[in-house]
Length: 458
Image (tube, rainbow, N blue to C red; front, side, top):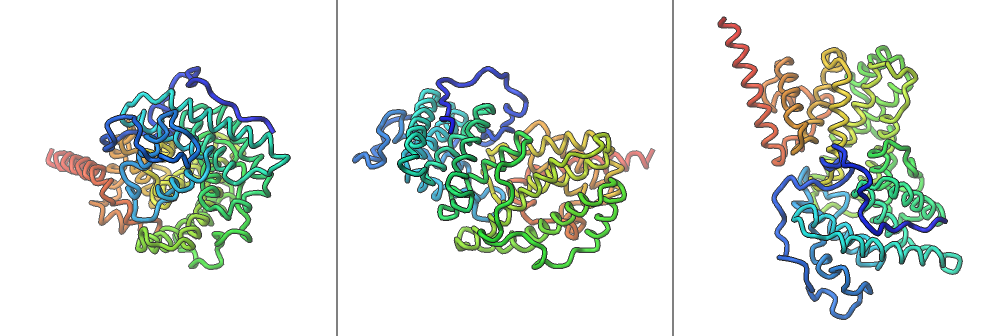
């Protein structure tokens, strides 16, 4: 196996793209005020007996004391559902292994450098280098001692760091390493005994596939080994709306098999939103470990199917009607990232998805799509807007959503909820984090209505 590659300096060979500046490569975006942190790096006395085995270099103790800044401003910004990556769970697992801890502290240092503008590059380089050195030593000795699950966790954390940093070549190399190590221990099923590392590994695989547009390395998990594959046998019958959309998709796109797959995935997502999310949100942070693992396994497998839908190679690239599959898939992924996985607002992946939704919308005849799929297009535009908070695209989505609601005779969020209930709707869409967004939509609609009245008077 190829050793991991240390980066001795930050990679400045590529100019920052719009996606990187906006946090769309997974880089946290400081859209809110700075967290309340200690005044500056220093010795916090966290580990006076050196039980963590990492020493004091690289401001290690200080970074451990600031670990929760990774989850700032809140763990549950989008919904009451217990987050996919809980801060206590993440810290506990990071403290279990020196290499994993070094990799995790590189993440903390990067967050502090972007949020509160501390100079952290030397500490980032130190912790990434230490993590890679430890991992390479273990891999070199793997003929004597098998690679541990903690080592896979450390390599996964390094890989995630490269994704955040936008150093995609290093990310691909390290993802190769994650894939090889997972296969060496018997596949993803072997990680099931350490749920956090299983989640982290599949998460990096999913996000990498989304950001790079590449095929996932692990695909669907074995439903016989992990709980609750999202099959259809236990779901309520598909609605008449779903049946109509299936026929319409097949007729307009000329792709009956892909139309069938999309409606099946839609059916599963509908069950997730209307049943499973509702129950999980009622339990909040008190949901049992078995139930949250079942929910997360369900979502992870659904995400792999959505990625396949988004990345499907259309036989005729100029078939604009087929863009509907990519639009729906991206919106569904954005929903899961924000509301089911409940990622921190500074996570940039859903921002990237929002940007891609806009690009697809600008490629098609929106009005024609709205006539064919009125509820779905309204939902897609709304999800794109919710994911665009704090970005340049937010105003564009506000105007488009206001125009769409105005054209459909929908006035206010209560009527919007009624219009979308049969398709897909969640009360999470009206959460406090979106208050300003909905206020702006209402103002835009009021302006349109005033303009309409003035036109009538003339």
